[in-house]
Image (tube, rainbow, N blue to C red):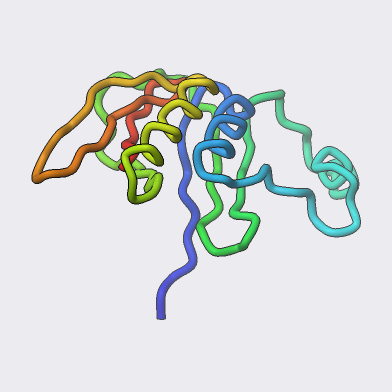
Length: 136
């Protein structure tokens, strides 16, 4: 039996990362628990300190298939290449890939390089905080 998991990404601004990766993956910001209008309402009702803006956030697959992605503010900056990265499968055509790249550039990604290999190509990009990912 597989284990349930979430992906946790260290960052500087969790809110900005939630917005970017929601667009990138077709996810939505995680709604508050049932019976609460907001996460702040939930935290207050459970006597939990409200964290500073941008320090924590999560996005989820609206179809409840993919893993939850949690963003946590950390004090240190990213300094080296990622050892793990996400590949965004844009679709089977060149036009699908180009459209996804354009969409991500519009919300803060940067294009690093194009890789042409074995008759196919993909784009290495970086999110607004410099984390590398690929559009395949």
